[in-house]
Length: 477
Image (cartoon, rainbow, N blue to C red; front, side):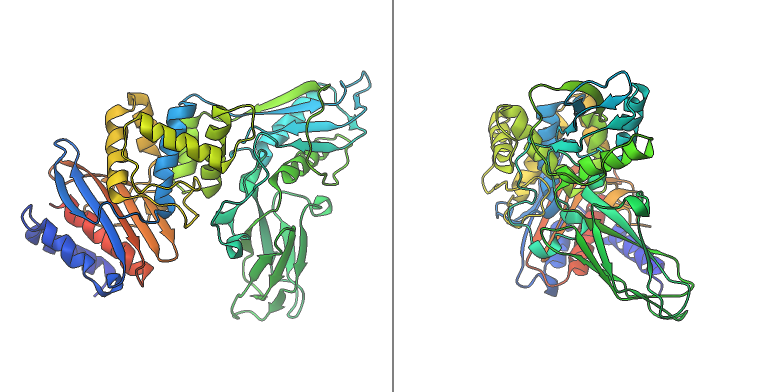
């Protein structure tokens, strides 16, 4: 039987068998599957209008949320920074630009912790400097990322994950999500080295990362087996494996070390591309000198727009940047840290009278396995946001959540089922951890909030399927 036939059959069965009276037994049956034999699963489902609890099990068990942590982080960021908050990245010269277009000194880029800064915006900065007459910088381009501390990785993060995009570092200055795109293509003949390029940077100008590749070209029809790593604490990217002739290029997303220096380097490249004579040698970050001249700025989109870039794709770097930013805003005299951000989270929950029993905030993304929440807490948070956010806040936050069968991290979930398009929720996934929490508009028009937190199961695929089965049963209830 085809998958589409199975889905259709399941939908018909659920429609005829799941009622208000047996929904509880259906969920109990789903959670009794073998993959959960040694697992801890916390679930809470509440009817939004009446507040009636429809289902609950282990709702107060402290569990690792994975990316369900982003529900909490986005809530606090929106509440503390505001819908219209924007980040401003500034550029200064140690001296003014002289009449000949020369900056006789250094250029400084000063970070605000903006997670959305990218090469396109740096190119715009370079163009604005050229428009002001800049032709040459006698010194170098330096980075000031001291708005945040220099702990680029979160507590409890797995060091083995560091080269991969989801474990990108975060700093006061960030660029292109603190990753590079490495394109690997087959050589002209069998046995030739693969052709390796860094996307977005001319080959002659790539000086920030050092690529060491042993990837070989093999005969057409062979198996592509390109693998990569990055030596910890360095920007040495190691490639291995093989790529067949006639195959398209393979694009690898690899994290970089020290985003502050990386951003300064990318600005130097942008200036060079705009015709400015400048050293492209990466520099060590530092602190902007007191005597300096403001030359340019780059402003981010407002938080109302950044929420979608954070929640839809579940971008971990945004979570860490927002956590440190709320910490910095609470005490501008000190660099933003994960700990200061966590204190803001704790204070906010107390101010809003949200019971935080069992809640432990270590990072803003959920990548740390030291975070804990409860299904009850997530339920309460979801209800709080629906009932207390202003109309504009609610619209921005709700619209930023992935939609089942439509977009974000839920694009491939519940596809072809009646529930597709009717669930706005956040996924979460770590080794042995899977979660799904959000809002559901049922077939009969009833609105529900739900939280499903799973720790210690044996199969991620089966855990996600169980979540989808519960969601579909709730939709058809």
